Amino acid sequence: MFSMNSFAFFSLASIAIYLDPGSGSFLIQLLIAGVAALGIGFASQWSKIKRLFGKKKAKSDETQDEDEDQESNA
Image 1: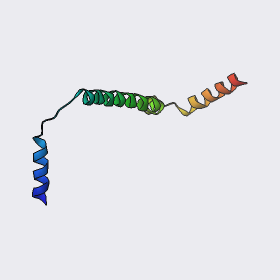
Image 2: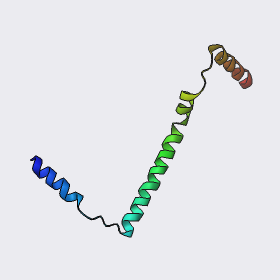
Image 3: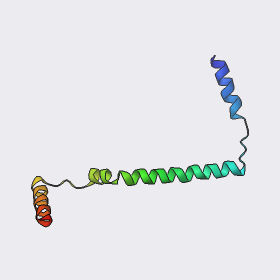
Image 4: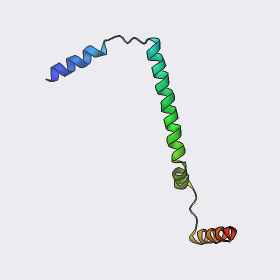
């Protein structure tokens, strides 16, 4: 069993790769889609990333900010 798997692996390694224009455009589409997916994923998680690396507020600062928000909404 192992010898059959290794034979198949090494025989595939020697196959010449042919890229026609359709394959090239498909690879470019994959690259563009990957970049777009990374951008959308990063943008959707930006608030979590910002909170992770942001400064921690002291407890008194948080209550003071909440009081100011309530006064501005009134």
